[in-house]
Length: 129
Length: 310
Image (cartoon, rainbow over all chains, first blue to last red):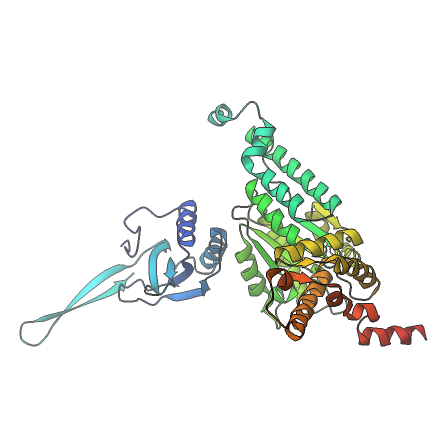
């Protein structure tokens, strides 16, 4: 099942040129770019592994693209996302996040219902290959 | 490809291109802000012309490859290498050879790590920052230490060479240092020599130029030299040149900083009444004459030279 998380996830996968353009936009807003990857795309899994440090003093998208290439090489079968962090006072948060790499085969999500007190039910999701 | 051929211009007006690119401004700034350095200015003008023609040729589809733009600046300390590198970054940016046109200035410490596995990430970090701009490596020969074959500098050199070759569109590397040591560095690392297209040599400033520089520096800070101070400064320049650790314009800047210190001290101790703007911004002969240079330089240097003479 195709995972839809973050910006652009209902669009076809971004090409490298499109990713470069997005990173240029991020840098033009003076946000810090960082890369994160995971093999567990569960929606509740908010904290993905960091790929290196956030790049706070980048001027050109090429620097981030070099890191992305290195990350793809090391984890070709992982989800990789680009994040933009705004460090200005009052925001200090992630402003943008989009997936730039997906495994060839994406997991399906399975919903598990469990009976609970009375007639109420509890729901859980898990990813299954 | 046919579409491409149709959109290509058949004629080029170099003068118009020159105007439109804003290169003229950078060259004018170079002429205005840098005193002396005639051969350097000449080389930069030639480089600008070459790049402008190359750009026109590419627009017409006559050439496709990015020219090699890596450079080496050789010359003694204080001859304006960093300043020129800054302007070069602006020039390359206006001509569209680097996308952002910023200058990242580094030395060995920024590239080479302290333990195994530390160097590569450190060098990559710097290269990432420099992407789209100009990487200025000051005293580049320190990267290579022939007496220690396990030195991590070699690792940084290899990464640099690789990036200089593969990312020619993304960044321009300028290496700077003393002429003789750079020559040795290049002969030991032929990879660099072949990847660097432009070697620019920075001559020392003449005494007259240094005096002119000192006045421009002071002018920028709203100070003036009076007649006596000007003569003293000329003498200072001539004497300072013969003493060790002479660093051209940098020595002059340090001398002027100390002269301002003495001027402030003099005003503080001598002034009895209110001072006007002229008094606050005039440096007199006494402020310059108090320098140790007129008494044979620093004490440590003087004893060393006496010992050498004996």
